[in-house]
Length: 512
Ligand code: SF4
Ligand code: SF4
Image (tube, rainbow, N blue to C red):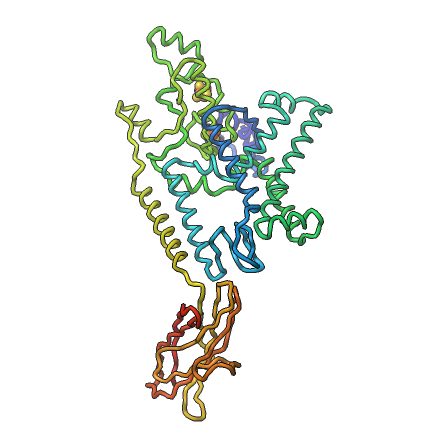
């Protein structure tokens, strides 16, 4: 037998459960004659995609998925049109990422670019929430909330509506291209493109005043970048939700790999209760076995759980990367169990630990409070608490100081030492404000703002326009006798002359 013939034997080896490569190596070693190493091109490394035709299903989890789909997509598509009155001259859109103005508006919250740490905090909370969800209920995010799942679900529903349910669609796909088939396929792709286009369109509305942008888009007066983003997102939505579907979860998304290392035996996952389902067999066979007093599992091997699965997984084979935990197989199996008069939830949300306990005749245990869940919840609570506290107590003014690097100081002709700083004052309010600038730390420190001829000596006043920052050059001069290489801490204050609210920043006064 040659190596090529050995390769031809590969499917047979795999069919009896022997891994293909192991079978290949064993056969090759058994050959006495020298063998040629198989060319890489001879070995199929990837199996072609099997198109999935998920069947329509009804039940509790399907209803939950519908409700989540309508709520999440409703929020996404309509939120840009929600108005929020912030006063004259300020954007009135409830949620707006104003890149030109450098603001993020979220209802009553307004975030400046300097406050990017709030976004960091939100990202950490999002990650911890994902971890917590995973510790409690496995891939519940993947099954119900992930945008890829939600849009794929919508696209599959459109497909069923236009091309028929599983059987009808399968049958059509095997037929020649008739006028009816062409019309149905065209309708499907048109509707997919409409949804994809509206998805891209809604995205850009978060970056400008939505009603105005809609008008500009319709009259072709919107900026080119808006059309470009709509085009990109239309294409990605159409490709990911319409064509790639479960392949995104299987090959592109890192989360299934990460979550596998974060779960434990107490997490609820969609589980086939093999302790109840096996030995599986036809309904008639099971009835006959039970009549004889012999053991028969509840699974009647009808494959309903497989044909409704949007990723084509057979949940009875155990946990797998392809299972997004959507729960639709629970609905399908429940319908079968109801029909044959057996208890429902042969497939159910269950934990590994409880399956083992049931097998051992022990009562189930539910441990939602565990070290990891407490830890995740605590991190979420701490970060959310800190963010709320800083939001509630944050000031409408700010100051940032940078000491000149070169020269660090200069000695004046009268012997005084002078340090120079760049000071940035921040006014987050909607009114013009006047700040008194002081520097505390030197007994005789004289503060001046370069170019300011109006303020009294030593008491510079700086005006900052509404919702603006202003950068000024500040000189601090001292006649104080300082020790060699002195570095005196200086505290700069920007005090609002009307409200007396103050912002503070620290730096140093350097001596020779
Ligand atoms: S739907 Fe239920 S009974 Fe049918 S094959 Fe799946 S697990 Fe078995
Ligand atoms: S196996 Fe069940 S829970 Fe998993 S993806 Fe398929 S239908 Fe959803």
